Image (cartoon, rainbow, N blue to C red):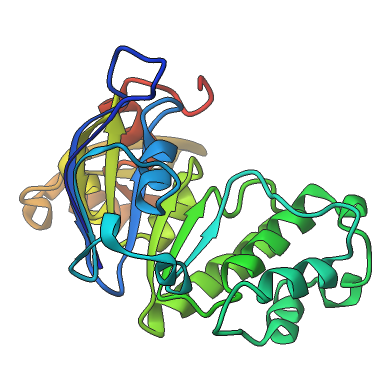
Length: 285
């Protein structure tokens, strides 16, 4: 769906490049995570890919066509949900939706979308009276108004309660199941783990790691098994190497003779991988 080759970009007032030779591709029907600390170049890359920023070096192809040569019909095929919701606050949600619908030839069933995200009953309320979570959900509906082939989602569930976050994640999965492609940026690693087929970690304008979440967790995790079991009324923890675990007599003996409370593999989390490969804590940005 997208192919980015040797992308470089420098903001006019900066001496140093913000994007320093990025190359990656996004397959049709894939959810591709683009992760990194603040200032790594994620938003800049997205703005270039959706033709907000120009004057870049390198090539970007959408469905095989150079985006620099595409006209405004390009926007019929993409939907964008920015991190900061942008709406007309002195208009109702329905008026906002009706306004943006006029920009497109294809028009989604907005009543169904609004009901799905829980905003239909509040469609005649001024957006200025909406909570942050309601604005984020309205932002997501806007991204789907033109029935796009490609979605760009920047922190789509940030600020949502778990129930509404799950609704949006289900809708993203359904979009993919219908053949849609997603470019996702998020600092909520559990969302990334649940949604993404592949992820790229970006630092200082460069991709420093890229693979599926599963492969990354295998690469950076420990090949161990950790048991928590009751011994003389206390919880005891022991760790065993994964290799040869089926023949490890001590491990098998504990399984047979002790009250096992939990068993965990040494699989790491995407949060740990994020910190390890970028050197930045998720709460330090």
